[in-house]
Length: 183
Image (cartoon, rainbow, N blue to C red; front, side, top):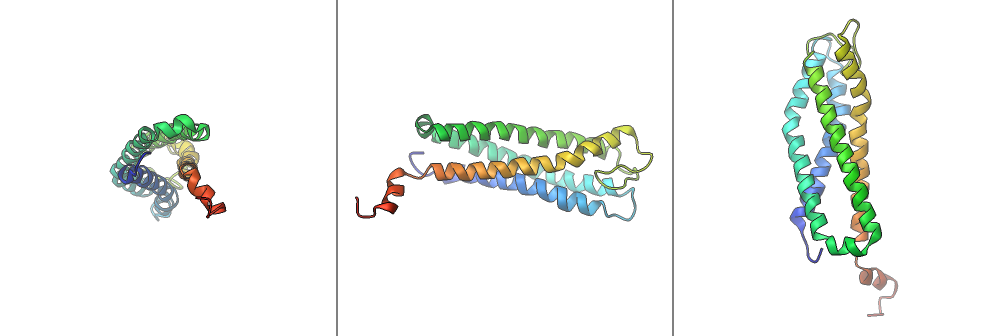
């Protein structure tokens, strides 16, 4: 970037932080606590209500991250053209962002299937109870794994964003640390 673009960078970073944090809190906090409801018929009801309340925030986070990401790519075109490692990082981040968005969307689809069966007695949010319909058991089995995939992917995206920040350091500033009187 030729200058500062705090708004775009903030959209990118805050959007990603909300996305990652919300996904992890949902898996650990929301699904975990709803699984402890004494009445097995309330478990999916509680989890579904929590995810329904989170959904608009998650959409806003994804949009903010996407807008910020596009802004950063556009603002860094010259640097990316001349910095192969920056280009590779951007391509990997773009691909992983697509995969993470896909896992988020698929998780929402599974959540809707589970919500459609709210009121069924389940052992947990991602653990079927005896005699639950096959569609619910399948959605829960898939969600048991998927609930951890999105937080893992978004954590990797955070690390890649940090790496990009390091790649944007000016060489002159880096060299000045080793030879402070060379200017």
